[in-house]
Length: 194
Image 1 (cartoon, rainbow, N blue to C red):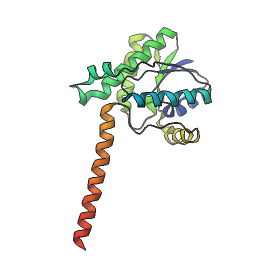
Image 2 (cartoon, rainbow, N blue to C red):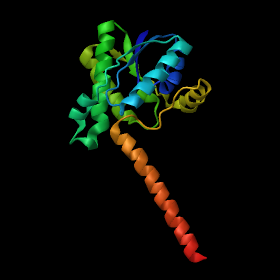
Image 3 (cartoon, helix red, strand yellow):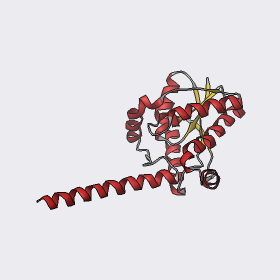
Image 4 (cartoon, rainbow, N blue to C red):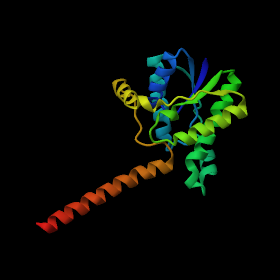
């Protein structure tokens, strides 16, 4: 089949691309990620994807418009549902693009991540496939998690430390802060015991 692969970043594309090509599909990538913040991160992810394209021969359309304003308009005051809203933005665009290009199906590299809501992704992809008259090609790419990481390291691709949105960036720093505070508390308790 001719498959449009929604791409969130270069490293997460490695395993899905490999698997789908092994299955005999023709793959075209589509980078559309208005959620990524800050702008430097957005550019770094595009750079990693371009490097992957050069190394693998993947052809991909890259939407280089920094779409943070639209993402924030939809998410603010709905932060508890931000992932679903983010999926809506990206997956509907991918399904629509697949239909416009006459692809047989579409799928997404978001299905590679262990940190994404896999069930909600399947639900959203199925909805938009039906809405735009294109097939959703489901694969559980998480089985290749470590293989993708190892290959990204071998290729020297930039690997991002968070999902991409401003909220996930905040959570990343909050977790570090919590760990540091726990270590400090542990060290203080150990010193008091001595």
